[in-house]
Amino acid sequence: MLVTGCREKPTAVEDIGATEITFPNSTKIMAETMRRKEDLERGMMFREALPAGRGMLFVYRSEANLAYWMYQTKIPLDIIWMDRRHRIVEISANTPPCPSKSPKDCPAYGGHEKAQFVLEVNAGVAAKDHLRVGDVLDF
Image 1 (cartoon, rainbow, N blue to C red):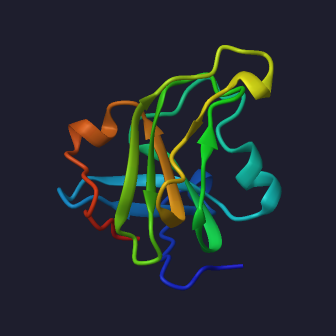
Image 2: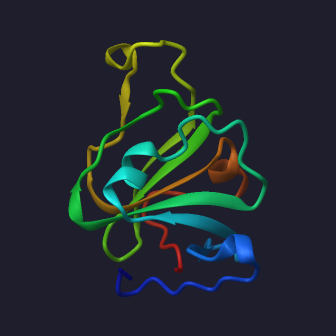
């Protein structure tokens, strides 16, 4: 299932199913694109690293208040929520992994604004690329 408005541009075998995202400063990243329920739920769990220039894009069927948590996520991330027009509505910068082995002890992040897309990138990317609420990402 493809979402209208998401242009996928794979450049290598590992990029099949990925979306190229361009930031307002022209930086481009390739993001694994998650659409299936089980992929949306698993996300970055259990991963040891995220290569530079990479991310994970979560695509939802409609806008909603989408809170995220870092349960079983091993690396700090910037979490960027976008509305249906790809406009950034919220950013959780330098979001730390949850050290607890119990999901109930992990805090929730975001979900204060309606979003349809969520982008996870390495911690520090949002600051390095000067991403701000109101910016529009191209994908």
